[in-house]
Length: 526
Image (cartoon, rainbow, N blue to C red):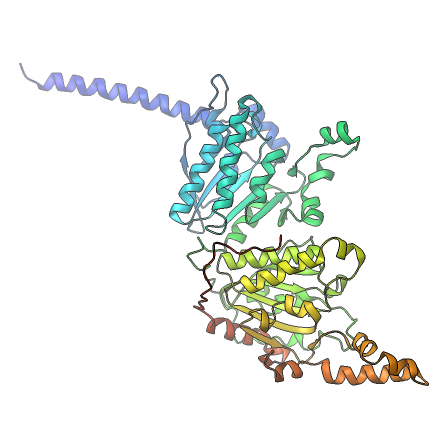
């Protein structure tokens, strides 16, 4: 008997069987993709939020997402949690590989169980092995109570990786919904936290618990909303109006960061010529040192296309931090803002700057520092709050950083804050100054009162002598030339040449390498 018909029959049976299996697989996929179902998705949209998968579609390049672990189920039997309440995988942003997880609030409130955590841990491990950023889209009610200690164990696994992988690859967190209890610590351990206004909040202890324990009446937004964390606590680095705005900010922020600590940030060619002068800066600084001006105008004027992404904008506003491109290269910017607290360094400003400096150094982003500072903030509250310890963080961060470091003294640079703002002694590679710069131990009036107190008190006209001595001190010290004469300032430049000079020096520092003594790690004054 011929084998042909029997083989055809077997092939037909196998084909039907495969079709049935494929149909079942597709049905399972559809069920998982629906998450918590149409009604919960509608509630998500009604709250002004996108679904977990919609967020990934908007964040990533079109058709670039490859999902992992779609069929993972909860550890505890009987729980209905399609995809375990989190979508994980990899994709690209502007053609660069990233690894992502997006918590699904429509599935058990996005609560974290053991298998949910293991899905997140898998993408984190793969990201480090590949050398690519980790992006977390957080929208979770917190630990899954039904799983008890297994849920806590899951959080521990995630936190451990956040810490061990810190500085290895960039870790970015977007908080797009509730984030309460232990759940807040994973975003807090990452490099940048972005929050959606109105929809997102973060707190350790919620309003209900506060009400029962302390009798304080406070709502979620007032307790831990995006604006609270952007302006008061400093937890949030960037805030967007909604999911879409936050996801756009994530894409923009990633453009300044490398794939990993082993690589350099991507270049961004543009049409802004390196030789462009900045004449608008010539008359910006007033002879009266008490007159404020917009330091942001200085920063924007010299950067490519005058674009600047300010980070931590609402927090500790006396110091400006953020990213830009200079001659096509990504740079981190630290600057005093003389229009806020005269640009002095206080506890929060020191923390803000130190953290930013260390982040730039971890990911090979050169640092450009713009200086106009009278000193550290005086006062009992600052002293008792630990300004010594917090100010030391800035000193430590600049000294520790091995990336190219450029400093421009725009106006005042006095006392210990002169050192904290990346002086030559603290490791600056190049220090430039405008002719308006004043480098001294303290301002002329304070110095004259200390140095010549007895002469002034004994004078027949104390005020006239004080004014004379202040003018004399200012003529000698309130300029950049004494410091330049000692080699602490490399060059005094015309403000209109600022962009040209910074780009020239930045290019010549390309490939800088620094060898440091062996150590397990330093001990920053926390």
